[in-house]
Length: 112
Length: 110
Image 1 (cartoon, each protein chain N blue to C red):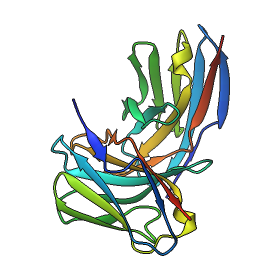
Image 2: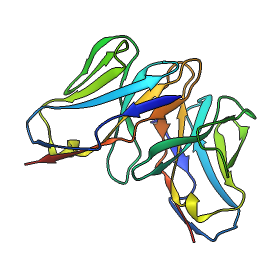
Image 3: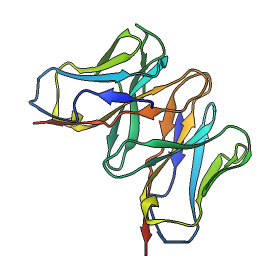
């Protein structure tokens, strides 16, 4: 069974803290994505990666960075968390032949 | 850029048929996807259209007209478990990116 695992379901952090969100997939997919989901705004793409050590900016990359050192792992980094980054973060992966996304369960981040 | 519109909310009766529309404007097109998302859960894939026409999969069907920038998701024989948000997403040409609409929250009532 396909699996995308996000390290934390719920996190509470303080403004200015550095935050790491980890995502691991076991499907050998080349493509991995980070989205955030907010009420009334839907899913918005932050960053994506189509290969190890490769990354591309999505629609809202400001305030975020990513790391892809291994094919199965894609990390989202908030260098200095701010309250407007309180959100649900969803990781996804997809094989190269299709655009079908397989999502993780999500990480709900609250920044106080 | 890409602009995707779908209704915010819809209500339908158990056993009925409901059609959820999605219109899009895009500078490049690489297919249209529909996802289902139950409250508190991750989105799951429902359907994919890259050519014009109707794709049927059990109780769910999806239609695409590329010339009109229009798609719909048709749900037949509605069940209570179909209460969820339905997300329309457009694939960007030459890329693996999907851009999502804001989603349509469907409530199925007895």
